[in-house]
Length: 111
Length: 116
Image (spheres, rainbow over the protein chains, first blue to last red):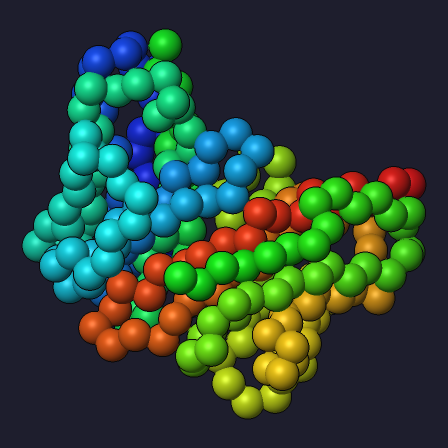
């Protein structure tokens, strides 16, 4: 079965640079979620999109933005990167609010 | 705001021992409940879920969980653990909302180590 795809899997950036993370949900899933997982921490909800509209917002910094495109893929844009942004970024997708399936994550390292 | 508590942060068991991981949530509305497992260096995988109906749910790999509404609890159990169960386990809750946006709130996780 198709799973959630995330790219890139690993990303190294310097402070103050920008990064774009991509997520391709499971086909026919209508909702995409972004989570941030710091080292040794639980995943924290950032933002979600339902049918291409932002549906909920969590602890997402103003430096970050996200959108969902017509083909349902989503991108998380991160600007003015800080050392504290180093984390695993997971994307998940679901259909009609049911269980969320997680992608493999993008490990972002900011140096 | 909803919150999820996992009481055990680190658990060490011998193979074949029984496992029970506690999870409590604080929200009085209608919720969905989940347990996810995260093997070292890997992504979150769904172990089991509760939406409605029988409060005892069975998941993959021999895991089960019991929803006790009066106690706001959703404890994870396995009768006999294996070395391969070494991983981090997260309890998660989402609210039932219309129009999508059903974000998950995770507990802090329990690191399980199974020794041979």
